[in-house]
Length: 193
Image: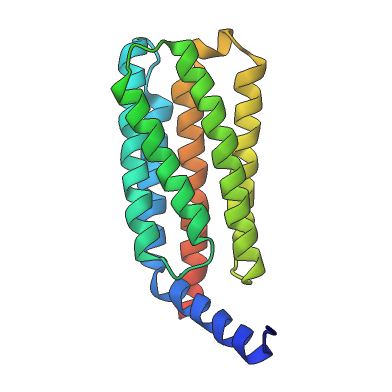
């Protein structure tokens, strides 16, 4: 089976149209993630149990928002990576809410795994956008790299980082992800004009 250049052009136009028509959804998701990230940064990690439950709800809510926005933008590039990321957020949220007394160290280990998987998924999502010539894919790439760096920082400082890093790291993750989506949405909006 060979791919004809007109098929590639038609596919490129469909992706561009999906991005241009759905820029508002990306913007909404980006703003929500940025707000949730800011909230997570300012949560004082005084009560470990409260932080675990709040972080669990933040992950759950961001996963739900991500899932809804992913299906609304199902024709945009990176659908499967975006879906994976949303399901990962849901799973992390359900785990943290369902087992709140798991301890701060186990939560920290869970966050390390989450940031590694989220970082890889976000990098792959960015590379899908690069292949489709979507602008501002670099923001997504940077967001994925930041996730991997956060995982390394938390791991390197164990067990001491477990006491303070949870809210801060989750907040930074969501804030960078939100800013990346806002940048992508604004570029798509500009392209639509």
